[in-house]
Length: 155
Image 1 (cartoon, one colour):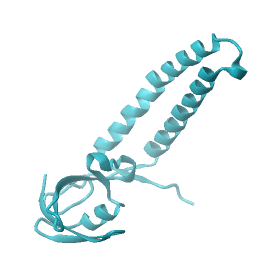
Image 2 (spheres, helix red, strand yellow; image 1 turned 120 degrees about the vertical axis):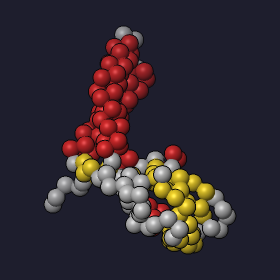
Image 3 (cartoon, one colour; image 1 turned 180 degrees about the vertical axis):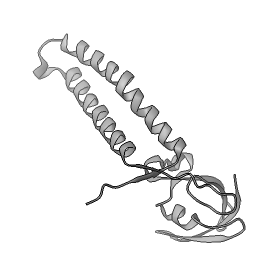
Image 4 (spheres, one colour; image 1 turned 90 degrees about the vertical axis):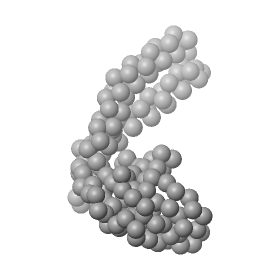
């Protein structure tokens, strides 16, 4: 079975590389200090600070492993065009049901951050927008029913 590739923009890859470097340096140094302090409290079998620090260490190491895997299997897609929505595009849309306007950046799954309007090309909205042009209306199948978005522009 082939390894899964993670589509991302060059900027997205750089963000993940920065996070990885931070975790490998500051993150590991910080947790090592917490473990050192917790050990100084004595008996580790009843030491909640030590248990908490070990748990935090496990989370950091898991995130490092996840980031390394994603970066090792990254596929850089930087084909943003000026005439249609593609990976890397920033697209201004208006939801026709209520007039809500937003600017979405189409990114790979590993970069998605819906709270900051970075949506995956694999998400329902992302899939619907891919390949669409300014002035077109796309329909997104959602649990609450079909949503229609008009594409107002590309940034």
